[in-house]
Image (cartoon, helix red, strand yellow):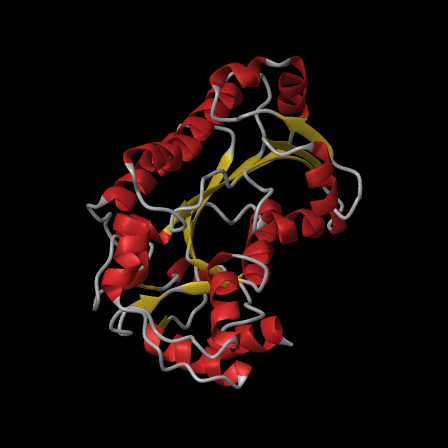
Length: 309
């Protein structure tokens, strides 16, 4: 299938792009990154790269972009600045929002102008849609939360839902993605290996996670399978509390995990963004059960064994 990819050049894309190439798809990648960087992600295999800023509407008018849109059969849109890596200043909030909302709006506007729109659109969202709560278990049927991230996800998803009528839409509300070369775990590993790791905050908050390989397999399956539509929570079936996550990670590394990171310190570093880590949420996926998706790494120990060996 001829696939158009946006936002697939970072932490998730490093595994997703090679997988889609192995599956025999023809890829066009829209990104602000250089062709050299993207060729490295693709292990120097053949992909078409268009270097633009997809959040700028004028960029989509370029002839090469329009040509790829007309020929694409499927679209994967994972565009978005990282959420929990900087303080949520006014400027950064705008970057977080525009990288998702404006890119998606521009994409949908151009898809709606096509005489023959793509068969499928896979659009990212996040479990931040549900807000945070220490006790409530969230599923795809749960209502939207009322904080910044929840409102952002709702607007992101609403933008995607304006897709052409003939295009199948799957929205993936992604949890904490685990792999050793990036994301939350990538930042934690050097600290834990030094014997300085431990839970963050009171340790009772839930972590709803997914191994990157399972997320990439989920995306690949949703491209192929017409039964996949609507919303799915991209999370493993066994969320864990922060205390358990830290303890099991320490055991897997044969290192102590006793030095808790006080919540106020994290809030000082990340500002409002610390809420993601300090409050957490227990998210399950009823839809993936119904779709009979098979996880390679259903438990956190499965994930740690794969990542750390």
